[in-house]
Image (cartoon, rainbow, N blue to C red; front, side):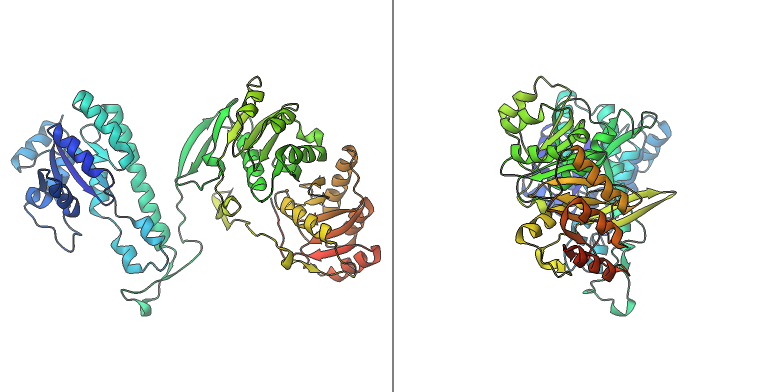
Length: 528
């Protein structure tokens, strides 16, 4: 058995080569890898000795040779192939260990030059990987250090790799080539090329959205069905999911997550992550039906639940702090589909042991969890894709423009910021009443902003909550004074809206007439 080793990332490669040598596997290698193995006292044959042709063009050409690709591609069960190898003095290569030039890491560096990017496009590596992966029945192709252990386990146990492992390695290899080529395409088609500036030091300007968009995902699991039972579905995650994101979560107990569970869980998790203090978010059909902050998880949950106990039934609940026994006991009294938190105390887990259908999700949050957000958002449309930067705008007190005679109190300003955070996660048209760090009424997803305001009032009344002296956040401007009148009639004394309507002055005059404070945020939060 012969193995060809050519790696850019040399993590674990020496130990692997030593184990292969101990099994009697002949080692072939290239450039820096060959030098490293030789320095470790391993008998290694350089590729140039195999091909009879020296590496050239600064290493750009070294493995693109029939004695390499013939050794990889020849089918051992085809007499004509083996005869051709014998006629041309080519030996088979049974194991290929390759990882590619670090193109993705290179272009991610600030100030990456076009020359550096181009130089880190691997040619010989992908060509060998494709050859070995195509001939998976006869050749094992290893493209990542995480595969070393499985490969060595089978070689030590059986002296060869099983068909199952070789096929799995082949699939992983083609996936890696796809990812690599996609990254190259994304980079090059984002470059605003300026020939007059071309030099070795040229750092090109890049468009935010590349000419071709290639994105890669890894399947987490097949789902029982999609949004409805007649639809098929699966859940995928990014190749490198961000810390603290839903895709990094671990399900501790409960039934398998459904398509709708995952969609709603993401809405809950992203919303609760927007708060720095202890918070609880209850989601139903992708909309917050209760959000609150508190001194501890129990207080935050109790306040959030009060907003709309009816809608909270069968909802998704998220905390941005570990769930303790007190909070767990309170939550366990209602029907909950999914409960999410950075952690659960042993006592909290014990509370849910008897509720085997409740899905508990643990998602570790990094210290800077408020800053960890998706950079891009996508939406499928007929034969196409909408791509945009994510709505990660955070509003600060300094951003607020007070436009009325009446000034908001410090307490009202704090509640306005709270309401504005919630409104960003409510489907448009969105109206959110809040008071004392708690949602008091939420109106979501209506074609008319008036209807959203009325629905928020109706829900507050049903929950026996008074909207007197509340603040209101509207995700977009009031086009007429009627929307403002509805929320003031309900009891609001302070309103936040983006501003920007042709009738802004009409609405400002109405606020002054009604004796309420109003601030403009200068930004809207449509969520469709």
